[in-house]
Image (cartoon, rainbow, N blue to C red; front, side, top):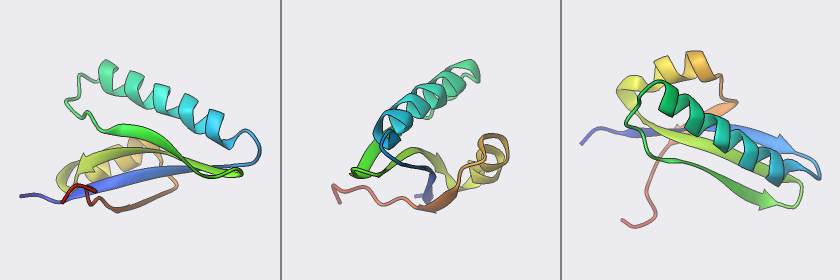
Amino acid sequence: MSRKIKLIWDFRGEAAAKTAEHHDIHLKEYLEKENSTIEKTGFEAINEMHAIAFIVVEEKDMIRFRDVLKPHRGELFEPKNQ
């Protein structure tokens, strides 16, 4: 089984949650435009002043997505239902 990487964009400030939610829309639009089979995107409020948007990609595809989408950071993705 190949590893998956979670590419993350951080948003801070009072509008962080709304901004992350909006960024997720753009990630989905990009995937649709590229006819990508990736289905795991999302956004999450960390606290009232910090939120993230993310996309989960196969490790072998990480560099391609990183170079095009320019996330702020990445981490190894570990599903919560393991």
